[in-house]
Amino acid sequence: MYICLCNAVTDHDIRRAAADGVRSFPELQARTGCSDCCGCCEAEARATLDKAVAQVAVDLPILVAA
Image 1 (cartoon, one colour):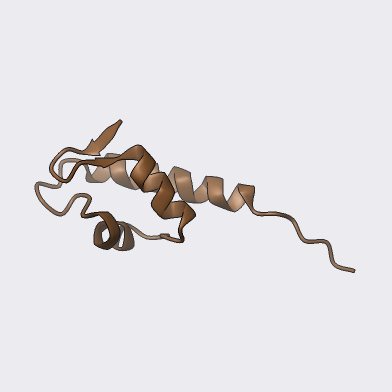
Image 2 (cartoon, one colour):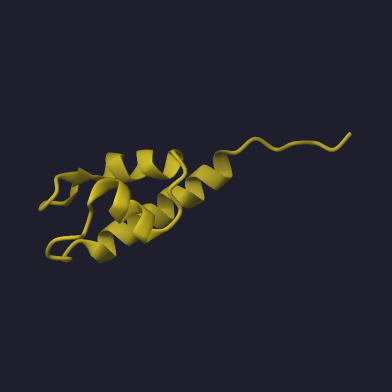
C-alpha cells in the first residue's frame, strides 16, 4: 500500500527501512523522501514506522547469559 503518494513510498519500504536500522521519522524522511513534499502522509508514515520498529524489537533473538 502506498503511504506517500508524492514520493511513491510504500508500507513495505517503511518496514524495510526499519529492518535496516531506521528508528526515527527524520531518518525515514532522509532514507525514503517520505513526507517531504505535501506532508499529508506524515501521520500514517509515523504510525507505520512505529509499528515496524516495535516488530523489529520483538523479532530480535533473546540472548541467554551463561
